[in-house]
Image (cartoon, rainbow, N blue to C red; front, top):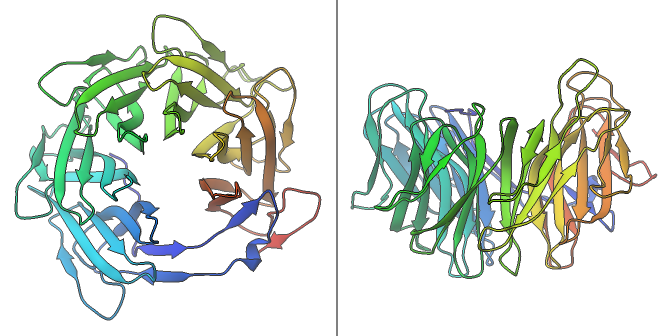
Length: 428
């Protein structure tokens, strides 16, 4: 299992970039910053905010961490690599923290996504496994015991979907698992409370967390993408596979007001995006050195899991495909799809017959620039913008507000022009 470690958790509520009506990144007001004191390593893995402005953060920690960022003390002691869920109020003050305890130090879990429903019930997706000896994780943060077990195989990772109520009390937990590496990396809800997750799996995996068996079989040794739907009680509804013999990974999943399911990811080679009997291939083109670079994809399925469309960003330029790595996606109130990530070289972001090239000003192997691209609900191109400087940059997160303004957050080094128009607005 991959872990990203950081000495302290820092939670920042900050609008980084606004596209549409441009506001300089320097002009945004910092609401608050909170830091947690720890004796070991801690990492915030995912975060969301409710309608009242309360913040929910899920992550991992080792040793002892004080989860009250104020003057109080709310220590938790880990048994190894443990998961936590923290709730802060709109001012960044401690409300509560929950601890999900493994049975031994070799067992670890890692949250990958968090969403809330209209009643502020909390849904968390993630992964769990073991470095060595078998064991389990107790997903009930209260006095009860609700465990999922792992066999202790270094090369086997399973997935979980957890539901807590608005106070953080246990409701249910479900496991999606197989005999190989199964990784969940996104979660979404529709208006009926159905729970959608995405990620990738290798070999054969059972996506029915109940007594039934609903196996999907990967067509590639690299693994294929899955899209799973559970109902609000955590019962199986359907699971679909995207992929073929080439490489594909998903990075985000969202739903629109009609319940359609959008999946964002990256692929290389020839990949079939129809999860049912049909064939809907997208293709990347081999480069001058005989390998195919990765392009972004957006897939749209109906609420029942039927193919609607799949679109590609990074269409071939000068005879081969550029590198386009998508990381995050948002659906605005009009159903438009907005995507961010990074790209290199010259990339065409119009998935149709037109051309909408963005050109990176950097030429190094790892020198990427930020892109933000907008498609309508039918997958037609609307616009694409780039932001870059003298070093490598990437967009990591994106969201929209009720007015349709777009907020992105990411990473940069050195001076960067964050104004996607011809006007230069640099931040150091």
